[in-house]
Figure 1: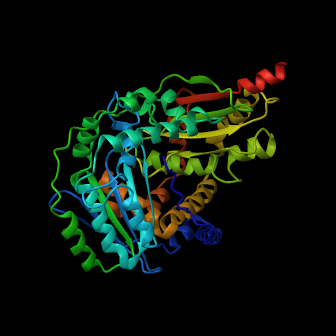
Figure 2: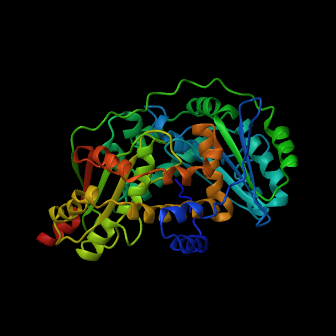
Figure 3: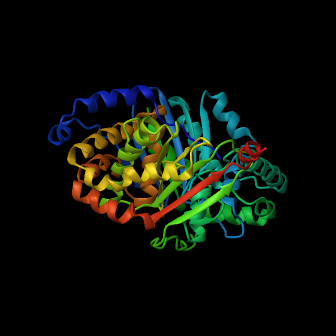
Length: 464
């Protein structure tokens, strides 16, 4: 599983400086806004296409997002969506094994792919004059993979090794990004082991892979974004030429991925013999995506855990000295925009063996119990400056890859990639009363799940 890093510090600093000039909400609203150019249309076979021009550098991004992620993989095939991501690099009709990677790299480009909760994505960043080549290559593997038992067996071994290295044999492996959904959620689709049980990975058959590809890797289950320096009319012609005659598939009905309202606080302990000190994660179920409370939670995330001036960082790091690594956010496998189903707002930290869990939770309660009374318009304005900086950082970072991500996500989940230009406005609509209402419903103790890592090795050493 790969993590995509899309942020560039220079743009972030620039936006922070711009934000620092904002003195009140009225002035904030008059600050100039950057609008992302968006051309959106759908091919006859159902492929959603988003074009966004940016001639600041002679590069182009091709991003293909398939509407299949961890969440809805087959019940007896955990980790299957991630395994299939690996299969997409094993060869297609005209490109042999690993030739796709060589094609990109030998043309001066970079590429990657990842599996997330609600999509699997692939992207290439290349010099602009190689755009047509990349469109052809992506269409070639959408049209048909070279799916063989040899390739499958090889990638099963690769993924199993990845699980062992990143989770099973790693201190705090899977904590909390992989662990917490399994504890906090009730619906299997949201609560199973996304990385995959080793037995399930072994059980995947060639027939499973063929059926998965035929079902989910179809143009009517995908979005294609092209971002960068290109001629729009020419690019539309290439997209029609290479993708237009790929047949659509009959898509199965989507399973119910809803999550019941949590009515009772949960707390769990995970023993970890490789950890050297305890760790703690706290999670709350998020409001419904795109609701007023959803945007309020985005601001509360900034207030509570984002940056050195956030309330929990100030309390746990600066005042109490319990930790030096408080971090958190909405959607640990992406951001608060690129998911579709139920989600958790979460934060985590490690702390010294001499510090008790009760001490840490007590300090957290000091912050949370006074949060509703302390929220005012000035606090929201500062949170808006921070989230605006983060948003612009995402849109402009890494040659526009963050822009491609949002465009594809909004096309897949909302059929409206132009939402990228209304996000700031939605955050501005959030008032103090909406935030307080959100705190009452979504940051209540009965909506909370706590997961503590117990470092067995450290405890054993201490007792000897």
